[in-house]
Length: 532
Ligand SMILES: [Zn+2]
Image 1: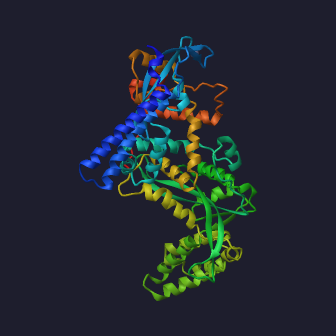
Image 2: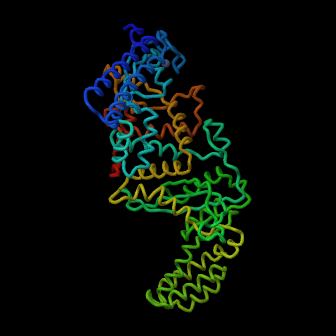
Image 3: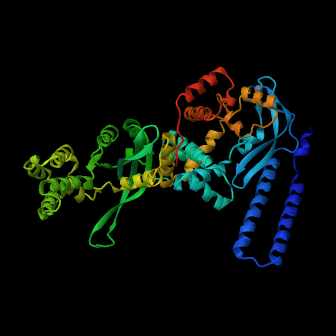
């Protein structure tokens, strides 16, 4: 086949597009003149037709990006030359709908590896979704109430129809990438990805706070998603009571994961380092009474001032008051208030002495004694207030609601662990105002893709495009060329992702005994699909 028959010269494209636009305009003009239409009807038609016109333009421009006459051979990663074979068409779903891109296909006789240079240049895989569409899918998947609703919103906004599973897939892929991404100080991150990230000044005082919230999982039942928040504070006049100053959280950033405290501690530590914990004059860790919080504080932030959340501490007073006096007794309020006044003034010893007298009144009193004894050194509230420190962990509690509860805990929702964690982590980056950074990270990963000989041969044998399965067949070790210079952790991410891809696909993709074994191992651990 003559390669030049598939390339479209610029002037030919200009003519074609002009003709299409003219046809569109004529059709719409006739339609408007024939009978009365509303502006809304007109908008609807114009948007739909322009989208179709746009899709054809994108497809043609992609083809135009390739050389008009494909070179007879190009370099192969093995060091030999790959020879031009023919033009092949790939389907890609984009922001403008599904498009077909014609591109040159080369095959290396020495190592059997095939390649489409245009795919690498434009950074797409045949049968896949474009990165621009994937970004929108992940954004909607993480922010809408459900993946089904996200698909509906996407269709209303872009007229592109994708399945709820595509939204889940895009959200989980981005989540998995972000979860594996090591936090870097802002300056390093700027140089490595050249993203437009605001530099974050080192604060004099950095707050670190953490909490957990339960999500319902197929595999493990109710499980704790841990949330951490790093922020600075701003002091300003209280709107309602101008004589008072209020201390408000400022520029919060979040981490979120479904993991053990030990691992989460490192994750939060990385974020705190990114936020300047090592150069902060003062570090404050705020939390409720959960032991894992204080273990992380001791291990990762040994010089931090530890403060137990005032509201959790108050709750124990109220519970004890109810046990001692009964819910309805007026003495309950007076007694509780007196104890809270003492706590407010750091007189924890006095509250403990008072509670000792009522120990026979039940578990609530006992719980208060044990809580105040354990956390006494974290309850010097008079001193904290005098120094203008925040004593409430409201920032992280609000984060738990925003990152986890509002999306993961809607009525009847049961998740698979990967899906729940992905959504929580994507929301964490979004709420941390790091969306552009998150999206920029994907580019690094995609460039690592290379097709493997086995998959190539299978395709040759079938003699047609594998469509959606093609991306999944990109198995095996990525080539380590000098150009790619993939760092060890990016390689690890690619490999982990490829392993995950294998698990998601059918037996038809198995190309070797090794892969068959891997797939058997993966099948042995059924992975329920979330109902969200
Ligand atoms: Zn080769």
